[in-house]
Image 1 (cartoon, rainbow, N blue to C red):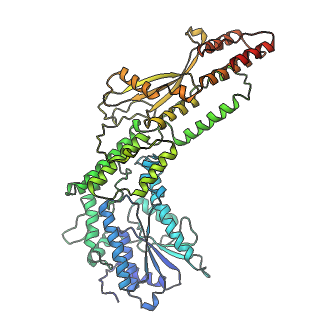
Image 2 (image 1 turned 90 degrees about the vertical axis):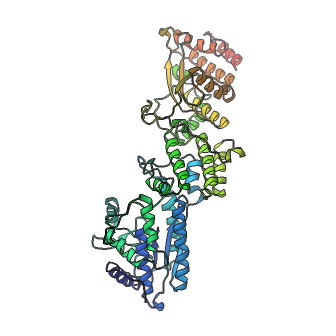
Length: 575
């Protein structure tokens, strides 16, 4: 029998657990984060098992804990301490407890996703929080499914295991809504699992209030596996700076929102009360983690470190480019304007991944903090996976780019969704310039060209696109259509428009000549113009416009003759 004191609120829960445990041979899965709720739940499970005769402890109870690998070092130490004590105490007390830790696979980890693939971390404005799915839900489901698959086929019941979730209606409005969504009834503590019909969910502490919970834990003083409840209480107090007790020793209000979590999380915004409080409490090593989180937040909204297009857009334009090049020699198109040029579509501000330059800078700063603090923040395996990710993407990687570097960030440059400068969020002290460059390429070709320059140089300048028509009646010299690329430049040392333009020109580095075969492009265009001239509905003014373009490309104009053989002779000369 247990010698650990219990409270009135625990006794009916323990009795209820005992009845359910002895009902059948379905094993239990106890989801445990080692916060106040799951610690209270695990305490009840532990005491229930201790109060059973050894011969009735005939089925395993699996303790499943998630580890995102980006928890605060203090929380990691606390959880690891709990897991070791649970295993040792369960063995000593002959309890059928099995400890499992759910960790994300390499490609599910935070740094691989952000620094490897460039996926922007979720913020308070994000609808989809991929980090929760990849770092918690998927790894935990992997462990749970493995446990379920080990179970024998059940007869006479519609589930294979019982999952205990330490959730309460008193936690929050959103938590209460989540509980009610799957519960069988308000009174019942049983619920449907959201994805598996083989799991019955049990909410043993559903109706426990926060004050009752803390009162019980603090009265026990030492949890059954050997951790002092005051340590758990301090985890909440240290994370918020407030979790006061009344003079009578009862919690005055909820500490529920405080426990430490991922130090990289941006969902709560740039400021981190938990890390800030730890710094103010004297833990200066936390200041380095706080600085990196703020850096990540600012660089996420800094257009200088974001790709101009989302990944799916790049893939779409690359496919279109291949398609157009293949079809252009096979089709005879009627529309002269379409033959002539592919105009840039309406440009929407939808920034893509973190640029390779931003990813490298963030990684080097992280490695510096790891070296300076002594904390293991990223392991060799994940680092190598990041390098492989960059290489697969097409970037050139050098060994010195993985050396720790304490570099100074100069502040973000931010724009509104419609493209205007966001003066409120832009704190960069350097002047901001817009460099316009005209290209006689279609939109797809420009995008492919600029992406290639990014891959070759490891640098990305944020840009937007538009086009300008030069129709003949405007009396412009070339009577042509150009696509316009507007580059945004903001760098230390670039203090004039001319320097900004020189920087962009140096970055472009005559890449059109390297990326595109001008002779092939001109010959292809010549063929289109010739086809137009041979058509029945050609117009002299339009042909004149096309011929001026051909002359600008260094080609002879197309001469309309009655002889098709003569026309094809012209084409042969052009090709």
